[in-house]
Length: 421
Figure (tube, rainbow, N blue to C red):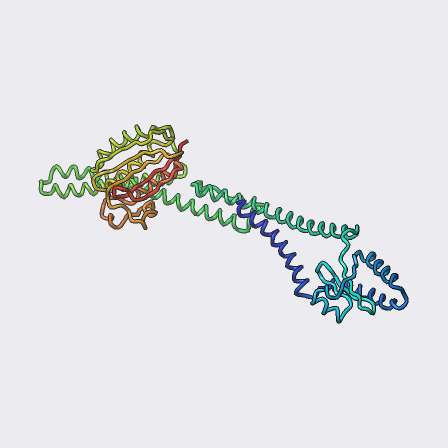
């Protein structure tokens, strides 16, 4: 949040500073500088007076009057030759006696001999120094007041948005009951109430979806069990020629049971209130035991390689389910071999699961973790597109990560990345 407000805050101050500079440039170079004209007219009156007095006073008196004028105007006056005056100002002095602008020097001509002088502000004068200090104080006070007002406004807005950000983060982490305060002092327009309405609708929608999934899965189990029972009874009274059809029917019932089981697993993974039962697991022994069980379900041979013995803090039941889903997926789409490798890299534990099949298309590398997605090339095979979604949910619950890439054996390579506790 600070990255949002700090650039905005300092950007506003820079804009104010830039505005003051542009205002000065516009006033000085693009428009008539009123203050310079007034200064020139005021000093012209003194020049006129000196010209009138020229015939009545001596040269020493003239110089004395010039120094007196310099002292009273808080400037330093010094004579200068006409050739030393910048050409553009020299041309202006042909039609007027005094030239005042925003450069370091101002110029004027006086007396019948057209003597030229230049003058500059007397920086050593106490009043001039005081004026500069006051100007600086005014600018600093202006900037400080603007900065203070902006800081108070931004801080208040930052405090409100932090509450909204925290609520959004909680919702994204599964706490669908999280809501933003709606007190008038904490509201940002209609954003708070709109976000709460969205969260409430989202909570109702997902709760309804989960209830429907669980209800359907549980309700389907009962008729499936009865169908198994009826087929078992019928298989004892029908002739052998019909046994093949009953076997096919029974196989399809097993497929439906597998689908129901995946639905129940996925619904369980989606539950925000699901808590992990984590404990320390010796990865090598854990995988060796599980691979013995997985091998009974797979036609492919499972090869386990432990490159780096290590311990992992995880929920053993959920981790076993995630690896089983990946192994069954590799067995389903691979050919003859499944390779499981454990490797420790820096502060991470990597578990690689690879197969020697055709792999997964690059454009589908992200979609394979979405519910009910199956590649077209494999759409005729068993499966309902929930296995990898369940794996992704389990990995997210552990705060880990899963990556998909191409295997050196020709098929897909899934990498589970866990941080060491």
